[in-house]
Structure formats: C-alpha cells, structure tokens
Length: 269
Image (tube, rainbow, N blue to C red):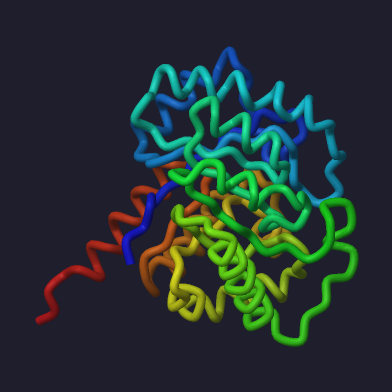
C-alpha cells in the first residue's frame, strides 16, 4: 500500500499544547518549517486548538485566526509542501483548505462537527485523516472502557471510513488509532502489541505517539525527556511494516525509518 507521506511534522499554533517544544508563532514558523523539511518531513500538521486531555476549547474564530496565517505563509514559501490542518471543526477545515492546506487531520472522525464530511466533498482533491477517540477532550481520560480495545478501535475506524466513502468522498483516507485519546496506559500498550493488525487494514495508518503521556508517564519522566521512548516505540512499530508518523522530532523519526528499512530490505544470507 502506497503511503501519502511518511513523516508529518507537528506545528502547534497554541500556547497550551502538552509539549512546549511544538509551539510556534508566526515569527518563528518559517524557520521551524525549513528545519523540519531539511530534517526529512514530508508534510506539516498545523493545529490551533490544543487537544491534550482537559484542554480548554477556544472559539472557532480564534482557531481560524491562529492557523490561517501560518497556512498562508507556509503555502506561499513552500508551495510543493503538503500541509495538514489539525481540526475537528468543518469551517476551520474549509478555510484552511482554501488557504493552501491539502489534508484535514480530524481527531473526531467527523463526529464532533456534523458538517465535516459534507465539507470534504467540496474539496475532492484533499486528503483526510480520521482518528478514534472515546469521549470529548474535557472528559476522555476520566474512565475509558473497552472490552477489546484493538477490535473496537478498528471497527470504528473502518465504519467511519466506509460512511465517508458512501457519501461520495474520493480523496485519500488515512486512519489514526488515537493513542492517548480516551485510552488508559494499558489500552495504549494493548494496541501497540497488536500493531500489525492495524497495518493489515485497507487504509494507510498514522501513528501519533510522539512524546505522549503513554511514554512519559510509563517512564515517570517529562514530555521534554520522552524522545528516546518515542524513538523506541517508533522502531518497534516500523519493524512490523510501513506506517506514517506524526512527530515533534523529524530528524530522529527519519533516521529511525531509514535504519529499520535498511534492516528489513537487506538481503538475507
């Protein structure tokens, strides 16, 4: 299966994202984008609404005001670069796509805004990443429950993708299991243990674990110290097959991909 990209670099236009190293304003975004591209990013993901557990929801207009100038300046300076807008709001997606984004990365898979899927139909060339989460941002980590987290997440992802296709969307779709979104630490590691089954689904898979609490809480460290753990889990996942990585640290992700693929593609003796 051909992947639309391998590395999606994170650019947060937020003051409260969980990892401070991912926050950038208009004055620094060009330098950071250039660095990420030089380090090996295939696409950049711009978000204006923090989706960390318990994050405060901002207004639609404030989200637009945060992401649109960044998308416009990146689209102007890097016209060949794939840009994704990280939003669950259809109007933010619409304006971002008009401004130069080519992908929508939606943590709610169209459920938090009933107009999201119909909006996508107005942009037949755009791509869409649909993610699984249980609950809302404010309460999703309060007490997530599953009988079989891997199976339930996969059934949900396939069901939502099928619905989007039935509505007439013909653009590329990628699926994100949603590590940390309505899952306990144990749920996250159960999904990782069954990662190969996600790669067997009929859509490209995006892994978003970079510096997340499933790493830093397990190791009793901070997000700033979680790069090594991120790289370790990326390597484990990539050894089971190709997937896309959404990351804060592009160079390390690219090196991990190159090394793992060198092993997998080497001639056996």
